[in-house]
Length: 160
Image (cartoon, rainbow, N blue to C red):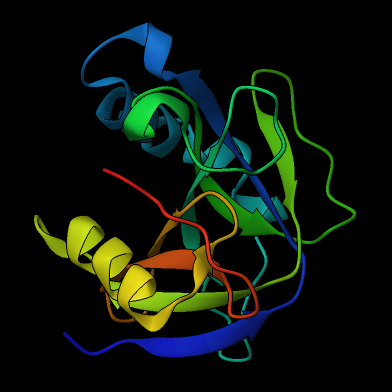
């Protein structure tokens, strides 16, 4: 699998928030709700130079909102299904805004085995998974990828 390294500045996402405590399938339900109600936030969406949306994000965080990986073997945490917005945007009622910190990311194509393979690759490189992994969908191409925040200076064992 081919990976690329990117430095992404801090960015903001407005979306629908849920928790692993909401039960199996909660992420799909959040995306359905976000998509059905997208007209409520479409005007707030950040746009690229060509006028298309900057991107759709599935942000993850630990339950303490520290943007750390999900706990208990990636089984407990929070998820925000939404669209990238200008940093100054205010979330309308029923929506939540998260401000993701600037980080260095290893970007991997999304897929059924991709998460485990990417974590294994990070370990093989001697890097640390330094935060929660994000899902990204490019509105222009429709391609999905995952953003793995990495720290190349420390080593931390991550187990699945």
